[in-house]
Image (tube, rainbow, N blue to C red; front, top):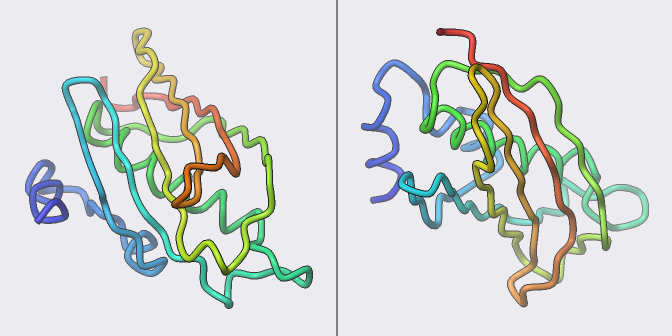
Length: 138
């Protein structure tokens, strides 16, 4: 249901994007009044690195797949200019899935500033990020 409402929000853009769907992402909550979006992604064995933990690039993809749709909902069209990630703990298959909680922190003219956190179902923070997006359509 949440997928359908987000898809209706911007007809000319693919929300959720195909890569979000390929990662089996699910939108959990959205609040456009405050600029937040929460998404859930499974931790699949195919996402693991040789150490048996989720590859950092897959964690980054989950972050980008949550920040991107949020950015399109608050100020389309825009592009990611910078994405900075700090990893706190390894993500293992036994957590089942991760939650990405993204929020718009500030908008300054054509710049959007976001923060996001990745947590397991028990609430333990696994990673955090800051992102800067540039609005190209104004």
